[in-house]
Length: 229
Length: 229
Image (cartoon, rainbow over all chains, first blue to last red; front, side, top):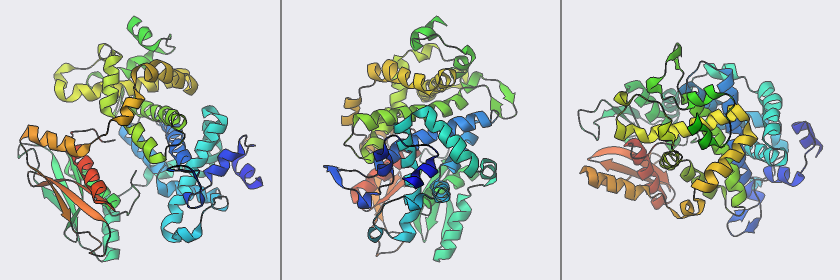
């Protein structure tokens, strides 16, 4: 309770919401057929509220950037990697309840932290409303802990992440340009990523480089190198 | 102006925001290098706010449904097809400004409407704040125009949509099970969709049917049969 207050910087109203936000499904109980009292529903809600708060922040912070830039920046801020790091900084790992036996530490603890952070946002929203949550996120979480301008310059290079992963795993990777389903008159480029000869991702765009980037991103998702958005 | 007031049900504060919400990029002017005064930035913001309002609505409407169900329901509500239909019902087509010469009517007008609806949500948010936008969306848009319980029972069957599209277009479609990049020991199913022999989508899951569904969805996105989420 003291830890929670320190983390939040305010006195929680409905404590049960926060308890639920920190309850991983591995220790949750079935409350009705098919639904557990875990943090997953709160995570769904918190993810949406966080997305909205971050969208407004970026909209106002970058008045002369187009929506492509804004979308990419938001993806970086709310990426699992970034949220996990954030949750660790906030000390959420000391609050989360989970069954360690059912979770392989290396694979799962990462996503567990980010998920709990989103669930926490959902709990704050239900407890205190949108305006409060927005203020809480901006002043207590994002300003002190998220370096937006550094993120701006970090390029998420899916192609190099894919190639790196394949080297580590001793797999062969190839980018292949294929014919378009619409026929030869099409101005689109279709790029196919093959890992050890198997198709793992494809991308299509008017620009060859963008098609490659998209194919690499899809392959990274497909191979679980990154979390799908 | 009268049309706008009728649509909104309230007197807009900052009219310029609403003008921007209805300005398609085909008639927008460059305000700074790389940025036009079109509705695309507002669409980015409105999409996020709408997502958050719908998430809360579903969270409360379905207290015993898991986050998978909630996510699927939200996708249905905010799908391009649904938002286009909604925008048409609201009469947004009479308010949007766009250059008809630069837009192929059949292909683009659809997405143009839904995009403008999202931009409108962004404008209302900047003009009136979250609480107001939430009320506006729930009471004036969603309750009268969105039949949530019907959407609940509409299954988005990507496989049948893909097959139907291929029949219309006179194309051959095949679902092929492929080897896994991890090798034979893997318990995952990898399914590849080929249209006229070209790879258009792939899906992977522990369950063959889910892998097929995912591959079909990806193919629908790839072939622009549906908008990507």
